[in-house]
Amino acid sequence: MSATSAEPTTIVAIYADRIADSADQVALWIHRDGRFQSLSWGELHQDVVRWAAGLQAAGVAAGDRVLQLSENRYEWIVADLAIQLAGGVHVPVHAPLTGPQICEQLAHSGARIVLLSTADQAAKLAGVAASLPPDVRYFCYEACDTSLGSAAVSPIEQLARDTSVDEAAELVANARSNTTPETLSTILYTSGTTGEPKGVMLTQGNLAFNALATIEAFGEREDDVRLNFLPLSHIFARTCDLYTWIARGSQLALAQSRETVVADCAEVRPTLLNGVPYFYDRVYRYLCEQGLHEHPGVLRKALGDNVRMCCSGGAALPDHLFDYFASQQLPLLQGYGLTETSPVISLSSEANVRRGAVGKAIPGVELRIADDGEIQTHGPHVMEGYYRNEHATRETIDADGWLHTGDLGHIDDDGFLFITGRRKEILVTSGGKNVAPVWLESLLTQDPLILQALVVGDGRNFLAALIVPNPDNLRAAIIRDAIPVSSREEALAHPRVLAMYEAAIAERLRNVSYYEQVRKFRLLDRGFTIESGELTPKMSLRRGVIETNFAAEIAAMYASSSEC
Image (cartoon, rainbow, N blue to C red; front, side, top):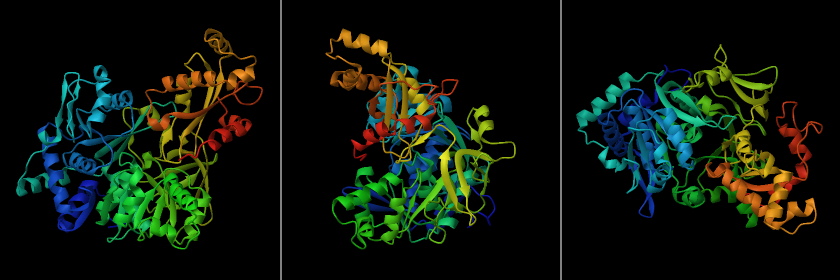
């Protein structure tokens, strides 16, 4: 089935066709009892239908939101498919988020059922129980004795409902007939420039089109085996690992964790990998440290000896990684997309690859470069809008349906897209995490000790910050604590002063996720000024100017860490 030649379809229809065509074939590999074990499409479907029937019995009707807070695991996949068969809207929450962040997304989405992976995830909500919305039911995949105020957390088996073969067939048939390409499938929360998450609404048609067009552009085969280790709560893995797997009828293996990927490759022997630049860089660094990186074939062997292609997304791919993989005759193919575009906009393939480019537009997707250099896109992959945020939707999608990406770039004469910068104030770490620096800076400058702050980390594996101390409050703290310093320079380098700022930063960022934490900082001996070009007349930070003026300080923060 082609994204450009077939009639518009849905994830529900793609899944129903796969079950009908491949019920007895191996679908999934899960690590259980010390080894990877296989499940057929039919075995997966039994659980999906039981959960879908349970969700409907619990009152989930068309358009109702169901929130899932879980790491990657078998139940994540079952829940996603079951929610869609039940007619619900899946709201997956990123597992690393804190209790207050989860509570905010739960309240904004209006979900009335929450699926939790572990007691540890439930404990996050227990800490904000007083702020949780009323009339929400909670279910957990593992044993959990946690109470969320007056709400109990029930075992997932209390939700599931056994179904006969005829009942299962009727449920799927009803789901297929009641689901259209315009049906809302999911709400995904992504960072806005102010830190306030925006709920991206993706339809069944968005996701189905993008999965099929990605297969057409990339060239996935039925005998491929993917190893998934990227978070399924992010759209990259969800479309490019999960939905392409279902549409193509290949095999998918779930890595045990991010730390076991290389070991899992040795056991699963995947043919395809989706990853972020940081993962590929870790593999490269390891081979360098072992003195093996120049050995022919060593890279493919490290990844299971059967891999034929790797795909990189989520962040810019450094040229040295592209070059190294090419030298090892293992294609590392870069793509580009946004949560708002389901996500793939452009993609490289074995037949269409160019150093430094993020590929060509996938079939059915239009691209253009605005007069100011912004990349804009149009097509069936563009989101319906931001949930309960019409203003942000109008700012992002114009009247003609073109989505403004906020990224800058150019298209060469052969149609390859190159990313050259970013208009919007969002950092993208090498792990593919979107971070709103303005929001973090606003949190930091709430502390009396901090006058100004600039958070950096674009293309890096962690965040760092340039901190301008409040001179009066710092002086008062030094006197109060009797810290023995005789000059400003000595004060800014004193271990007790540094410890004071480390504690202040940790306190201000206590309610943000681990990837939004500032791991390194540097105290500056002067502030950012309009005269130096570092501030606009409205006192906004000019990031590029500041990063240029303090390039040595930024480099020193990252030079003192391996970034691993």
